[in-house]
Image (cartoon, rainbow, N blue to C red; front, side):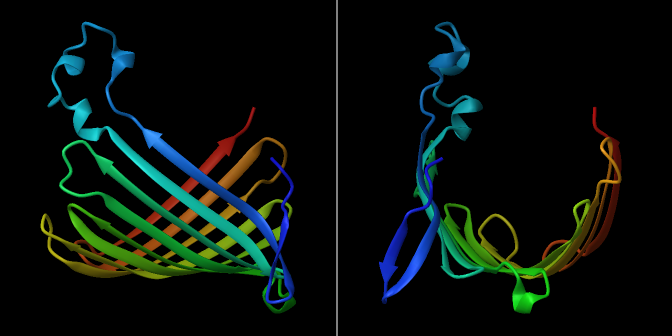
Length: 195
């Protein structure tokens, strides 16, 4: 990866941390061979999921420890009446008020053939030691669709990652979801060993 190149704006130096573009074109399943039934029938199950698209993003540290980022993409699947648009915008504070807290605020929206929606979220995390990280995320989600009832929902998710030693790790997650199609609480605990 090339090193970040500084760029000028408003007489302040901005460090560009990342940029990228991606073009996907997965048309025509030639990898399945000449005698494939799917290759001969354009209405096969696989053809329904083939898509092509273009996306791009940028991430820039505008002030020390404050990063702005964005990603925009457009894609379509075989048979879609119109293309889908996805947008994501965010700001991240790497060390909020010298507390070692990382705060990340995001806004995302999509517009596709089956509906529109978006979410806003705020995430607060902290690396406690080299072997432990804690994160709390909360937000709102909206969905407007012709295929399902429109919904607004709220969510809170927390996680703790801990690696007590070279070989063992632990991950715990808790999710609280209210509104929309489902109200639920979910707890997950993972204990594992690395080789």
